[in-house]
Amino acid sequence: MIKLAQSLFPDYNWLPWKFARTDSNFWKQRENVVSWLEWIRKELKLDTSLEDVYRITHRDVIEKGSRSLLTEYGNIYEIAKLVYPAHPWKPWRFKHALTGWWDSMQNQRQFFNDFRQAYGYTQFEDLYKLSIDEIRAAGGTYPIAMYCLL
Image: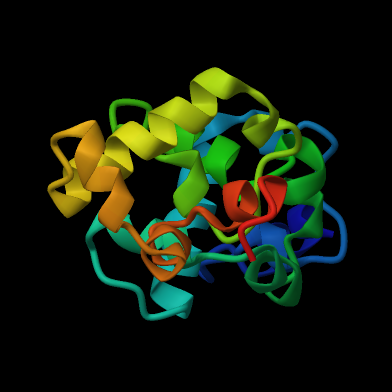
């Protein structure tokens, strides 16, 4: 359909992901994913800061008609890594957890080391002061549930 629309009205800026179907290789092309991410950030009125990419949800993607993008990449984290590979993405900050990510002790340590740094907990003794609300606010809902800290 996109090719027909582009042929009939070549001066219009068509957004291929808004059509019911895209080419089978459409999302495999990085430039298409880059264009989509720039577009959805504008649609959702997100800042130019990459920090706002964490606020994009699976629901946003689906409601904007791009379910096939999630089918291709699985989650926003993988999309963000593809588009901005130099940025140090923190998987726990995305609204949807990566399947199996929290199962790794190394990943849990990565989260807690980042958490400790962000909250100024420099010594292990400082961890006695932390609260579940702080962990949850930092994106640590899953380890709280895993260790029955609710």
